[in-house]
Image 1 (cartoon, helix red, strand yellow):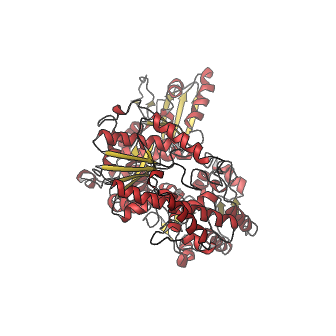
Image 2 (spheres, helix red, strand yellow; image 1 turned 60 degrees about the horizontal axis):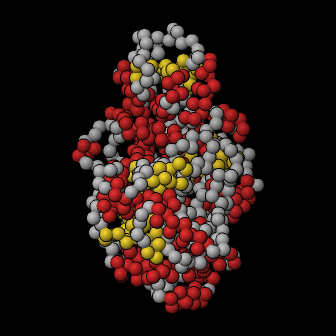
Image 3 (cartoon, rainbow, N blue to C red; image 1 turned 45 degrees about the vertical axis):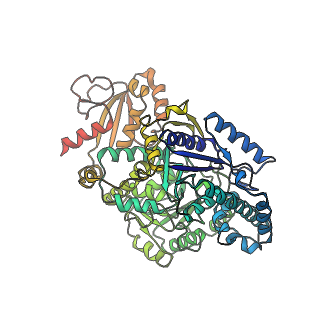
Length: 625
């Protein structure tokens, strides 16, 4: 098996560490590996986006030095792509790019090479804009630079593919400029491509076969295969725990763009919302990264058109309140650059709102998760918010391309029938939830957060942009060392699908666990000891995953006065302060009626002892059956 890996962006060292760990494992399994790096061929690339990190002087020299040091550190052999480029081809690429009219740039072709289409997504990211107007000199200059660089990449990569004749191309993301060129050229030749990106949880990898990192088709295929398969109790608990982590900004593969949830009553008061009136929340999307990708756009002329139509619908429906939540990544302290054009558009929307519509700006610290909690109906363009709303059992409407577009647990609206879909939701009452919606959404969420990605602890993530390899010698990366590494290697080698279809055991499952999970739960009150939860914050995190609100359970924590401050710090560190009901008491005498003790220490007295919240919940459900 011959594996070609083209890696132009290893200045992003975390991705290089993931990539080279897998490549060493492939070599240990008998594969021949060709590792090819970029040696300063391009006038623009995604390593230096104008909107986030403008290209400095000697950018390529700086990048090459950092990449070479990382490759040496990890013991890889590599060569430079420039060796596959005829010097005359640089001149031809420049002549072609300079001859293009501004109006031709976005769709520029060189023979049958669709260079403009292949690099256009990177220009959206480079400028952080959802619209590429070639009449704008900055846009035209970026398009021309990326077109030149894309054709240089095509010339060199075609010669490289000829020389190596790989069985598989292993490629970072497959979306960005020369990576997209490599992806498209390989697929034209019938070469199997496996792309890699960070997964949806920290220290995981997302591997896709013959698809870029933003392709939606793999998730539709996942649902076709797994959508009818019920989840087990443990799988439901995993989803619940990770959804709680997401709400509190932990366990993420990328930085959190929104603050942790606030008190719902405080949020309603701040927005002037009457809890007796249905609150609809429209979540805008940071769409510049995917706006040019097939399947993502939908059939609305633009996100702005969708927003304006929603506002006009609310204007005609004074019985509802509409809250527009501008995505924090559009332009806040947490965002990656600013989409200035989109922010200006939304400012114009904000200037003409009816009384029953509020707009929360990108910089506002009101949590998107608090808004999900108070929403009777959620309206989504691209965001994973649609999935998270559905996991809460809420009514969600998807207007454009999205992970869950077309799924049975959301409503998918086309431009032509959008208002009809909205009218059908006018009867949704505040606080309404559907167990069926939540059940189906959890099945999808388990695939997205767990089954469809690869756990990869061999590269630790002390920060979402930094990695640390937990191996010191490539000889350690042999079969059997790590289950995630073994799985990644099998996927690249074609021995296993990125997400295997369900087997006989999965297909034979019943839905008893799901029915028990989503049916109304008995309210649980349990006991824990402050010393134990201080020593093991996972006890609190586990409780929050299983009993996330006071309507489901209260954890009484026996706390000596001198331990109070340490307990408060432990609750804050576990990220559970705003959700579950936690009560600290110095005197817990007379609590024999509690469900049990949640604690590692042996229980004293008549209360049964449980090692974790899931075991306690299982005991309560069995006792109430």
